[in-house]
Amino acid sequence: DAGVTQSPTHLIKTRGQHVTLRCSPISGHKSVSWYQQVLGQGPQFIFQYYEKEERGRGNFPDRFSARQFPNYSSELNVNALLLGDSALYLCASSLAWGANPYEQYFGPGTRLTVT
Amino acid sequence: RKEVEQDPGPFNVPEGATVAFNCTYSNSASQSFFWYRQDCRKEPKLLMSVYSSGNEDGRFTAQLNRASQYISLLIRDSKLSDSATYLCVVTPIKAAGNKLTFGGGTRVLVKP
Image (cartoon, rainbow over the protein chains, first blue to last red):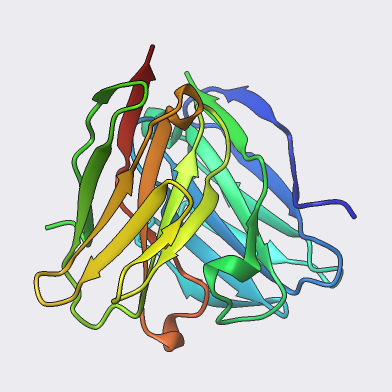
């Protein structure tokens, strides 16, 4: 079975641009969470979606938005990119809401560099 | 104050030695605790959970001290392959769903 997939694996953007990152959860999983990991820091929670609804939001500006599609895949959008948005963006997939870490699976991440 | 804090290290450890490090958390209502391992430029991977009574998984021992609000990880007989960043994770109350709160990580370098 395929694990969590994320695309693209790497990308480089310029300040002020917009970016869309994509995540496909494990087949049958209905919840997707997004995390940002800046170099040298731990991952920070951005959003959680379950059954296509936002169920949690971290302390990130409105430039960050996300959505979940009927097939449970998800997009993370970031507008007006800043240099500080350079990070590894991780997606975690789980069957349900309220899953413990043994039930959550991380994708390989998308490495975003903003110049 | 950060919700979860760790000594960033690096902890330089001779191969075969024992290394231990802690993680402190600020929310006394935190529900569950875990250690993750993250290799350079890879996603974090769950290493083990942490129970109040302490628990072992091979060469790894984890402990929780709720009174002092810290958890610890001890690695015995360190291997070169143990070189990684170890992330402490706290899960809040059930109502927060799947949210994981990560510490900043402790870097461990095992050297021959």
